[in-house]
Image 1 (cartoon, helix red, strand yellow):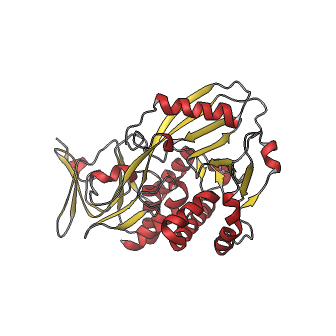
Image 2 (cartoon, rainbow, N blue to C red):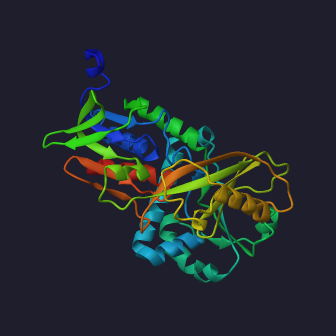
Image 3 (cartoon, rainbow, N blue to C red):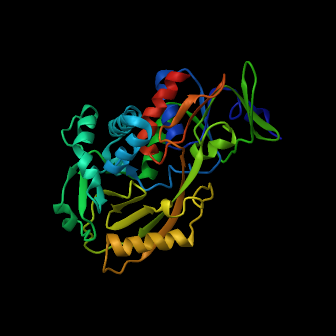
Length: 368
């Protein structure tokens, strides 16, 4: 049973409850408090630290690779694709406006895509022309063959560079966002899972346990792949991303963020170590899960990719393995909308949450 003290403080009525303390939930809270400082905002997170994709990703400040932009344009047309690219571009700018690079280990070393065939090169001028209005650069993507040798990537034919992408420390960014939320008087409940939501005409009740529930005026779902529990009508498919991190490598030449195979493989340097993730396209069905596990099949596949492709002829040890859960759908556009009279959602970020969340937060603040 709870006491009157808890009931009148931690569990009192709020204007807005946000479920999920990942990048989307935190940026949404910040945007709401900046727009409506008088509103009380509570973030509920079921884990002791934010989990899901935000603390389990590869730390890419993701702009998107050439083949990815081409694939998106073919799947959902140029208008939606350019909207998404702009949102990522603006999102990365916003992160840099809020935090010093040194606070979140933000490095703008450029993004690189490695290719074994020249098909995407036929469309590079067309894509650059489309992207110029967003990036302000003549050549957002350009061929840079000299760097294949510089990075020690012997196995590839082509290397495409883009200067808009960087890397950061996801944990440090989350900590800074939580600090910012505290500054703005956003409140938190960690370690509490939402069991049930019941919406009435004049309020919404969020049940945390048999004897604890909190009333709010509005509720925002920001739990990405885990939101399907409450948003049954939305197309939210979980997508697990598995990752390996090497021990330090002497004289590591790799520097920057790298994509291969339409972004299904992604790797970067973390100081003098290599962080590699992906390969989901080798086993789509198994990886459609919310289970935080690694599989022997994909871990072996990533190790082979590391040793054959990224640093051939070198002995490397793996120091850590983990997985994170993204959310995808039949197209890449995130679901940001009003779900009912008092409920809103910002979910399905297709592995681009770092860059998308700062702008998605603003969109939600406008909606409420």
